[in-house]
Length: 122
Image (cartoon, rainbow, N blue to C red; front, side, top):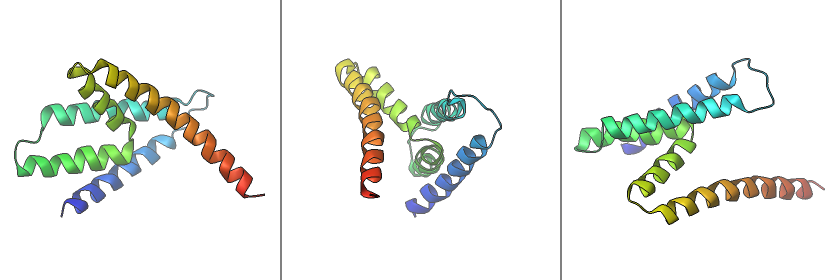
């Protein structure tokens, strides 16, 4: 049953992300992605702070909102939450490594994936 909560929330999150991407803001700076990530971070922070996971109902609401809606909207919100959790636990080295490895690793991953795809089309 948990899969249904995540799937329904994910559909709502993905639709929200798509709706923001349809705004007619033209700039070289990826402002719509930034807006999406900022809203997602604010939302997941609110969900975790307000709902928590105290009982079974809270866990289901959290699955729907945190994993589903926020995850479908932007996984950057989850990355941000996990980073804050590490920093709040005073795991500064791990938090810093997570930030650096995530950002640089993902940029390198996109670049490498793109190059592999380009070479495979030849």
